[in-house]
Length: 114
Image (cartoon, rainbow, N blue to C red; front, side, top):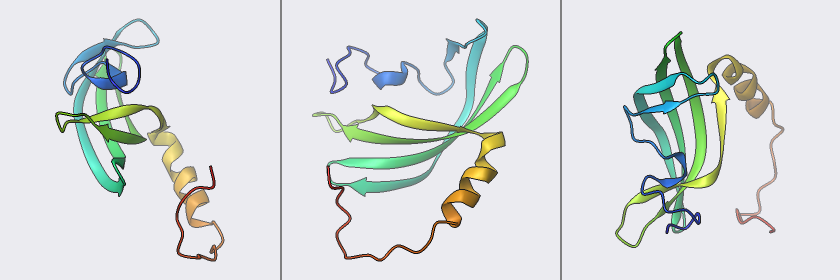
């Protein structure tokens, strides 16, 4: 059993790159490429931003994901349960919103209050 409470050896997503899995329409979704754009250490975890391209029986799709990964006792990185997927058509609006954030005064402490 992994940290997420399931027995899936591939983490919560249950797939490996290039593998097919059912999508919402019942067809297959085949991952054609997946790239880690940035990995940011967070203690014993890391925050990863990835870009994925896939193909369904009807069309090609792509998306960005932001997810926290954790390391197993064997030293392998596994995806956590929580994450967010941003569709390609949503990316521009998300980037604009993040760039528009007013400057925040930093006290040097990046820890979350919870």
